[in-house]
Length: 512
Ligand SMILES: *Cc1c(COP(=O)(O)O)cnc(C)c1O
Image 1 (tube, rainbow, N blue to C red):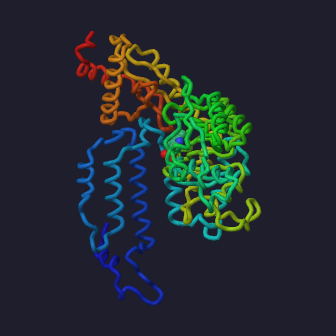
Image 2 (cartoon, protein in one colour):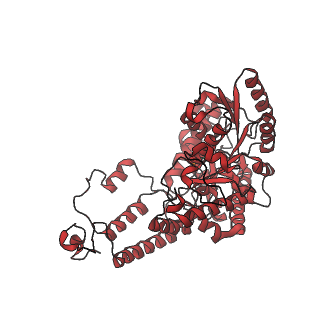
């Protein structure tokens, strides 16, 4: 709470400064810091306690949120009391946020964040090492390197690989993409640019949109992407891949990169990674795996067999802010040969070597000054241990599996897919047996509206997928807080709302 001196403390005033003591407007003395910090920690602890009883989202309009924030208010000239500001910020965030840490949040691929990660971020910000250069972050750089070795080990990837933390999956994939582009160019690409060489890359139609951004940002253009079709499991067709590479070679084009996805965003599909690895070996192409979501399933004793080919990849992108439950942001790029990262990013002669000398992360990626993203991941990995992660990932997968079974048994629901911890399905009222185009269009409209209502209800949070033209409800469980009861609560909600909507919306020509 502000005391009588609070104003004075925040006004730069020569009277308060002496030769050896400077009181700046951002100074918090230790007592002030302790009080504000303790109060904030208490509020966060209470927030985490009450989370399961809150709505997943208040589902407010932008206007309402802007009003709550007083968005038009200009920055005040005079400073304010930090404890008061933190208190207000906490209230704003607790009252006007969508909580991806809620046990019933299953949208997109956004995980519940481990509380130790929040404390880790506080510690990281307090010490504030600049993990661009080893000299500026001695132990933080080493913690990042150790975290990368641990993650590689969880994936059964060589632990002497290169690696770097970045903001998320998009950036991790992009870093690997640039390493591949440089590694496979036999001219001085970094100086001369693309020189009109028709580089070509290959991925399935299920690949996340990072690939368009990378092709664009790297100067290749999205026409360089060869979209390979998928089978009915939404996995890349390896035969078509080989044929397309042959055709491009015959036409004088320059294939350089194949991207396999380990856990697609929409359904969790895993491409035939061993076949892709073999094709890359055959044609001397870079084999990259986008494992932002699914690669970590490799740590399970009963991991999907295709993930055994992760160890054959030249590079892997993996997202600790997904299935390692790190708070945003944390993505990680792994590159088998550490020199390839340096080759793609460093503007220094390689004075340093991995293992023997200092690692300067500004040489291994696009960033210069870098925050300490690895700490929160390093802490969570140790809190849970390998066994803890096996348990959490297995539970997520088995809950998604259970949901799939429950959906299958329900007469008003149509089960569509289950892979890893993603289950997709749709509401399909039993009366609607005709499978003609008009019925399909209606079912798509019905499920689209149903999703909006489910999201706005605040009871659960799902997102969607489109599977062979069907608009599907999609549940993705990367959430160590979700229980069986949470999953069981979903079906009555979906069928009740679905039924009500069907009554409201069903057009005359489809009436029973
Ligand atoms: C989430 C995801 C991405 C993008 O990752 P961000 O962390 O959101 O940048 C890319 N690819 C796949 C397969 C993903 O699941």
